[in-house]
Length: 250
Image (cartoon, rainbow, N blue to C red; front, side, top):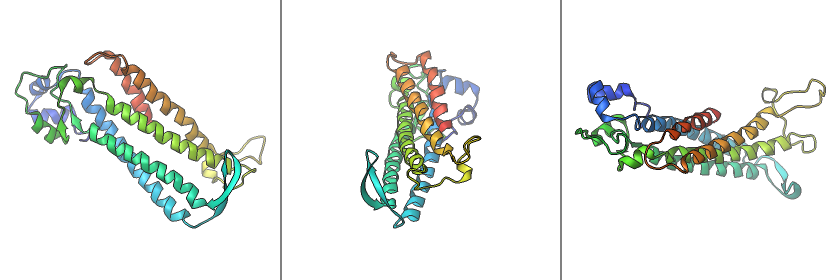
C-alpha cells in the first residue's frame, strides 16, 4: 500500500467517475488516504533509526570510559559505548513497534461504503491488489470506524519521542561545565548575548520539548475516539491535526 490509493488511480482502475462513485462513500476515502501518510512516515522513520543505530555502534565501540550515574549520583565506571548502546536498543524496540504497525495499516477499506458496503459487484480483492494493499478489510463497519492505525502510530511516535528526549537530557547534562563530557558543535548550539561563556544545546532542548506535543497528539486522538458509536462520526475529522502534526514533528 502506498499513496497510489488516490482518486486518480481509482478512476483508472475502475474505469471512470461513475465507477468511483459506486465504490466509495464519503466515509471510506479518508481511511484509505490516511494510511498512506502513516506508511510513508513509518518507512522514513525506520530508515533514520537504522542509520543512527549503525553509526552509534561503529563509532563508539571501545572508545571512552566514563563514570555513569544513578539518580545523578556517581555510580560505576562503564564504557561510553555501553551507555549509548542503551539508546540503540530503545530505538530497536521503536523500530519493531513501527514495523508491527505497518501490518494493520496495509488493509484496504474501499468498498465499505458508509457502513454496509455497496450493492454493486465490486471485486475488492482485485482492487486491493491493484492499489498495492495486502488485503481488503473484512468488516465494512469496522473499516469505516477504525482509527486504530492512527492511534498506534501516534502512541509509537510518543514513545520514540520519549526515548529521544531522554537522550537529549543526557547530552544536555553532559554539555554543562559541571559534567564537561561533550561539547556541541556551533551548528547545533547558540550563545548568549550577555553571557559569552554559555553555549546552549538548542537542538537537544528542542527535541526534549517537542516530545510533549507528541504525547498531546496521541492523547487527543484517543479522547476523540473514546465515546463514538459505530460507524463514521464527524468527530473523526479531528484525527487529521494530531496525525499530520506528529508526522511533521518526526
